[in-house]
Image 1: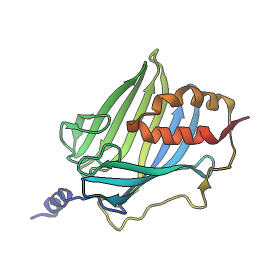
Image 2 (image 1 turned 30 degrees about the horizontal axis):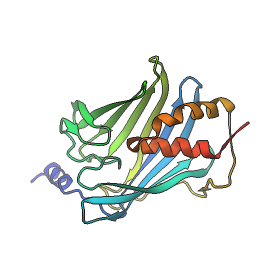
Image 3 (image 1 turned 90 degrees about the horizontal axis):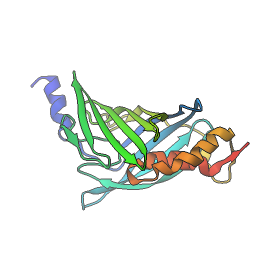
Length: 223
């Protein structure tokens, strides 16, 4: 058996276990304001249960302000995770997540999946870029307003994961403290934008947005 076949076979037996993690750099661009929030998002599995579920800790580091703006436990399905950033059975025409994904492109081992949802008159489009490892190396989320105008463009870029290489260690920001009791200065325009748009993201399948935006909003003070 050649090395490629061995690698492909190994992918079939990937299992999620305590200590499994994915780490992403997240850039949220508010297009109409030309302003950006930059975070590091860390998902780390804490426990696997007998009922085909697992829990993971979700932590968001706000690089703009050198602080942790959100941290909490999320529960997910072990066989087919709905929110944890791992896609099993890459290559299938559809993948069942909280926002279902449909395969729109497959080329040289790179797969692009798309999901779409509507919240009132707001459209949110999800694009997952992934290879046979099942770990998305890029995720792009577009928010489109009720008049068809782009509101925000969010890009997740993979920093590190130990799903394939168990020896890989995370590269987390150092010296960050939890935001409790810390005041953050945002421009009044970006803070107003958060007040107006954050409600669009408060749904289970957009928990990442909720943590990022609500965390910043909660501890922000207008200038």
